[in-house]
Every structure is written in structure tokens, then in C-alpha cells.
Length: 296
Image (cartoon, rainbow, N blue to C red; front, side):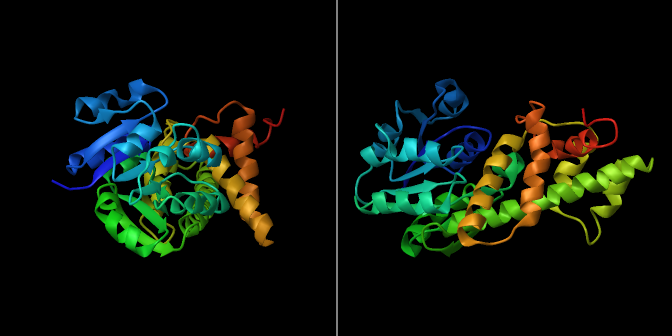
């Protein structure tokens, strides 16, 4: 059985299956979630439920968080009864959320001042990868901390790469979201043209996915989009948050990203219709809403 005691804060669509894979790998696990009932299945499998993030940290050698945005990470990491409050020198904090690289660096500095390591380790692969334990994990932070945490990361992911110092993981994740967003847009346009021409979109996906244009998005989200299955593996609202971070970083660095700006505006069509909770594959409907007779 692994020696490291692990804590997990944030048991949403991604966090709950990630924590479950840690249990399956044999780690002693303490968890916390704002809505305690979301921990019920994990507790039934052997996890301990803590009263707050500080208590999670006090019971753990390595603490992981997976929440929505920069303010949420700041709250669970630095706030009252937060992870930093309960962490001891020698503890390592891993944040798997997607947040601003600048915020990640600031939080890392606060933790280092207490002798606590921090890795920014955002994830990619959606709920499918979280459940299967095949996530891609891009990690920023100290190499020694990364090496110590590798067995924990391997319980949740398949492709795990140290990409540089603190904040680097978040930069790489934003690059991932640029590619993912534009890939979704390409998928939606292909499905839209296919339907407009009266051709079976499912057959189109079958052949295109096996050729040079094939991608994870086409294989995994294309069939959902064609079938009108918009259950979220990754919500439109969260993709929009990530694209906002992309464009903020681009503004700071004076880097032109016209494609990312366009994709964000297309997703805005869905948000304006109250569909921010849909999965990102619903982008195909955004193009339909922009078509003839649907601009009202």
C-alpha cells in the first residue's frame, strides 16, 4: 500500500472520479466538498470525510484540489480553514484546477513561505479520462516535488509531463484549451455543413475520424453532438472561463489569438440561451442558432 496519505478537495464531475482512482490505487484518502453528500460514494469505499480543507491538509502528506476558477482555488487554499492553514512543512499541495498562471505563481509563493511545496497540475481528458484514469496532466513546480508526487499523479492520469516552474502547467493548459476550443469549432462546422447538404453526419464522423482530420474531439464528442446528447463532460460555462483566461493572458503578452476570440463568442450564443450547463459539444447548436431564420 502507498505510504503517502492523500487529501482531495473538490468532488465535481472531474474530482470525484479522480479521487475514486486514488482509492483504487490503495492511497489513504481524506476528502472535502462544499456539498458533503457528493462524498458519500467515496466514503462508502473507504475515504474519510473532513469538515474543511484545513482538516484535509492536517490529515494528509499530499493535498489535491480540483475546483472551478482562480477565486475558488484562492478560497480553498488560502482562505479561512483553507489548505495552507492545515498544512505542515513538508506537505505538498497539487492544484488540478485551471486558473490564471499569475494566480498559480502567487499561491505557490505563499505555500513555499511555510515550507509547503506546490504543483500547478491542470488536467485534460474530460469526464471520460477522469473516470478511466487516463488524464493528461501538465505540471509546473519544483522537480523534486514532482518526482515525489508522480505515483499519486499516475493514479489519475496516463500522460504526465513536468513542463517548467510554477505557473507553467497553467500556461500549457491554456494552450490545450486553445487547441481544444478550435477543434470543437471545426467539429461543429463539419457537422453543420454535412447536415446542410443532407448527408448523414454520423457516417461523416466515422470516416473523417479515421483520417488525417481525426481527433479526440471528433471521436468522443462528435457522436454526442450528432445524437443531441449534451450531458456535460465539460460544461460550456467552464470552457468560457478557460477561454477568458486565454484571452487575458494574450492581452498581457500582447499576443494575437483571433481564433480563440471567435470561439468564445460562438459559445456566448449558448450562454445567452441559458445553456451554459451543457457540454461543450453543444457548440454545434450555436452554429444552428446563427443560421438563417434563427437570429431573432
